[in-house]
Image 1: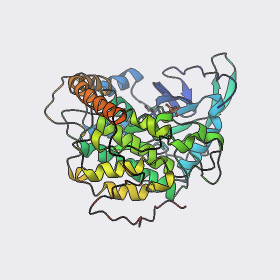
Image 2: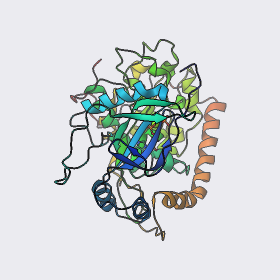
Image 3: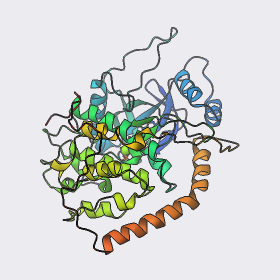
Image 4: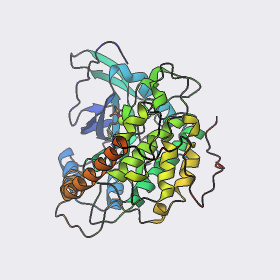
Length: 409
Ligand SMILES: Nc1ncnc2c1ncn2[C@@H]1O[C@H](COP(=O)(O)OP(=O)(O)OP(=O)(O)O)[C@@H](O)[C@H]1O
Ligand SMILES: [Mg+2]
């Protein structure tokens, strides 16, 4: 972590130009960057007000995607001064990602257009940005494809568990993207968490659809053989016990296996139980998750247990975890994020979530109380002592990591 206080950048306003892009609005303020919604303006393009008006309208998933593509809407990630090198590396990783899996974020390139032929975006583009004190800094910035459906963190804010089929589908999609990062780009993501998983299209309860998620934010990713100080970043509750080690030399790809296991557990419960903290504190005894997930198959519980093992050597690599997840009963259930039938009048990414959250509060309270009681029971009582090796290998799954994406060890 930097010693000096981080001087934030001045926020850009709608209509401001950054290279070939025009800012639509600030989307999010991350820990290391400002995230803007932006577009490549075309001759005769709609005004920003018209664009915003259309973005607020209810649209089917396919219509969203073509609107975003036609209007050349994208995201600009502008790093805070201290994190410019993180962003340069993130650009480089994404540039190297030829033929990436669908669930991995992509660099934005405007579609080919006869009037304005698209160019390869050379290197990370850079521009001058003012900080809050008015000092100017030349900084790289990252044009990214826009995923308009909000983040998994937004979805989990309701505290409501996801349908098991959807939770497993999300974990498999993200796991596949991670096994690509491990096996092809040879990097550990090191920041797998709900805020770094976004959805391509807004959740519309009138439209039953499967999750279409995107893993973002490679800002702290690193090659495990070339440790950097990046391992000190990342969100603590999603990181494994070994991330507490000072040198970072013991960290490998299985950091991400652990983090994805925590995210999967959170999706199935609607909230994280205190047991994950216990694992982080190197609790000598690992507590299996089955009592927390009475409705989940033993195979799924066993996989989560394997992913959360405090000792990284006992965790499956990502390709194996993905393969196992494909064999559980939940993977054959409908993976619908949105249930048809609910009919809110106005649906947009913001109001839609509010409606869902409102509808979920009662159910989630009940689920949380139940989880809390179970967790307390687990911690407070003396449960049957599971051996540290209590990893249930799912029935009917192929255990050998045969994928060519298997991480190098
Ligand atoms: N391509 C994208 N499409 C849609 N939303 C995005 C995109 N990239 C980032 N966001 C939004 O901006 C947020 C922050 O982005 P990102 O994680 O890249 O920045 P960060 O500074 O590393 O943030 P943090 O420290 O919170 O991880 C994300 O959680 C997501 O809500
Ligand atoms: Mg992030």
